[in-house]
Length: 107
Length: 122
Image (cartoon, rainbow over the protein chains, first blue to last red):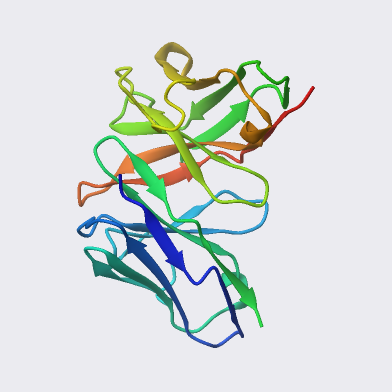
């Protein structure tokens, strides 16, 4: 079973700044990693899949990188609506795991 | 655009069975997707519960496997979750969701229900 560890738990930044969120896998997941954004009272929304492909409608300021065990979600210039919780996620043929989440808050 | 809507009791007694249904609209439940349940305890992270394919094939979270059952009813375009022997630790927002096959061949959550809070309490 793959364990996904996200860091930091909380990230405090200001609008306009660059955000870098990390997700580390306990074993290689190749490029099979997705990122989701969740705002209060809402269901999660797919941002990135296959480590680096933006989902439909996701702004270009969101980018993903990495492979194997180390992955990064980068938001190039924070907009007010980007402050939320972000989860990474992996699935095998029969199992799905989520990271514990990173809370991105306004400084 | 696929629509998913959870329904079921918002309050379940300890040791009882939690039963929820997810109605699927504007998409075929027999298409090549996995229909999934995810839960989120208040103020905490996401936990995958399990998934079902339209053929009835299922996969479950090993930590819940002994208590969970997920089934699909193609005639009603819905799928269901049953979780037995519940405790307060099962109190959570329960989401149904679709995992869609993307062109790359991977499955990703592309649609979610609004979620329903289920509280386990006497």
